[in-house]
Image (cartoon, rainbow, N blue to C red; front, side):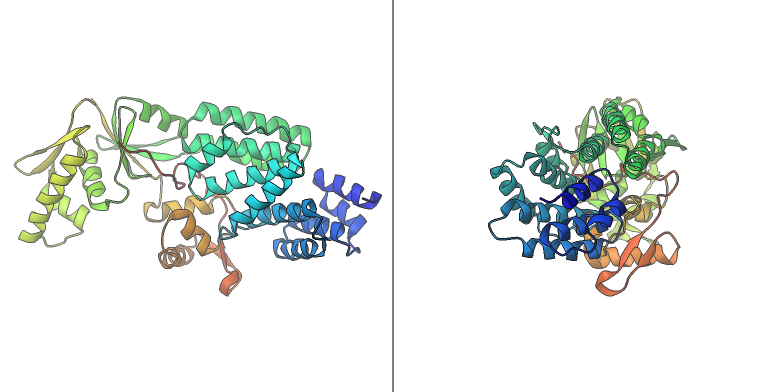
Length: 406
């Protein structure tokens, strides 16, 4: 490796992309192409960066497996940043294995970190957590070690382990200050501010108040029966009953919980759960069937008593019933939570992260665009949606995850 490549590599490691380009901007040999691609990625020109990295990978000799694998890892990171979540993850696994075989432990660790971050982003939290077990971040460069701590913090926030999240964020801040990379330090500070923002709206006995993530953690650890409208689960005694795939049952549970300790008239239940403006005998029959199903699902946590006017929730052990709801715009809350990271997302990536059809996500994005809550860039297949982080809006509690069930 000649001295220009060495100096450019050091400049990139310190976050000085323009300084690196001063040394290799006019060169077209494979190492220079790869470094130019990384520099363009740091400057925000992701499409140009991908082109340069692919050119570099093709230009390297087939026997230069390490260099090719490094280009693949760099392209994977660009795909992650640009929210190209359909990028083949198997290529990253292949690159990781090649780097491990050739004892390039630093870049192999970086590939491992990128896969963990990808899985966390699309809501495969259990898989991301398994990858973190036993993972040693020591071989990572300082910037990647700080980013690794951000992943640890993000995972802890989704699991509502706020003390662990604060410790990881503090460690990330120390590493970022030592690395002296302003953009990295700004990202860490932005992540830390999430803990001080309202994460949910608490509804109990007809009153509402905003809660932070640590407040939510304390509530779910208490003996209260909590109907969580952010993740569509019912929590009690440290256990969670998932109603994510049963929207009618969840709607009934929420209405009953919001009214507790009072009962709810049958007409109100029909209006909220079935959206029936004019209920007939078939609606009332269906209500009886769904109430029976809800009784069975919630049998370990609560009963549902029939009253003269309607039905009432009857907790078995809890002395308090609470509803956790998104703080604003409930209908599009999960999409806004993903877009709140400030990145430009394609509709396909949002659909993948949310587990929804791309067409339904596009309709929701069109509504949000008309309301001025998101903005678009590009056209056709290159179209992306983005928004600045909304003050007071959560970016963690609503992000997709598979809650445990009993």
